[in-house]
Image 1 (cartoon, one colour):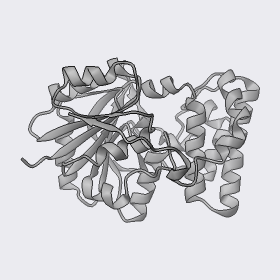
Image 2 (cartoon, helix red, strand yellow; image 1 turned 90 degrees about the horizontal axis):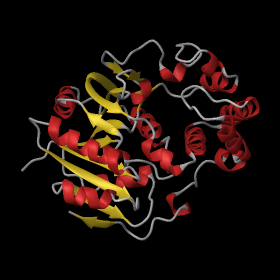
Image 3 (cartoon, helix red, strand yellow; image 1 turned 120 degrees about the horizontal axis):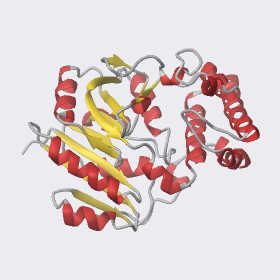
Length: 323
């Protein structure tokens, strides 16, 4: 049987959220042939047992170590048999018809290659995080000077958020985020999936920027909707701000050069330092003063980004595949 789409989910210590996510997929998806592939990153919280007992149709990959998000997605997507790969966070709940709409939308717009949708918070309020504008020196200057906090959501002073647009229309964007990312499998394979220099955060931005460089045009549709409880898996890591900072620094190091790169890294560090000094971190990145002080103390590490090659981090032993 030909598969339209392979839904890929990477889990880490989020059993209850993953249960809700998986249930919503099977409850709301009709009219398309699909498979679900779950890779669990050594959660040891019962996620593997829950998936195996409650969702026997899921193709389950139980990793013996935490591969991270990027490598976990790559490993799971390697098992995909669908025409499209649909990356979905485990802390999401699917709305009716989302998968079928994405399949139809992508087939009608093959030139775009990467597709996203609209995410809502559990209270029904828009979560703008389904897509972003690419970082720029101006956006990093606004972050460094707290303009992104003072004018949160501003089109001018918080430009990466693309303020004023409620994700309620079809629009081409710079970055489709990995919580809801639908991509032609052939393009995923051509791009080589996520770059393993990224552990968690930044890998989706890098994929979108590389896709644009090869002529694709990432796009979002308001008719593909999920509810997203942001950060369930990253909360378990306990170092979300450091992971975010490392991801952004790695993105800059990969795509920027020379004076622009040095200025970008300086502004990134300055923003962290000012938040640590003032003891607050409202805005998209959130975080308490103590959390930002941790980021500041670790700045030499995260400013270096992740290792320059996946060999810089352990990738063994191999995951254990079950069905």
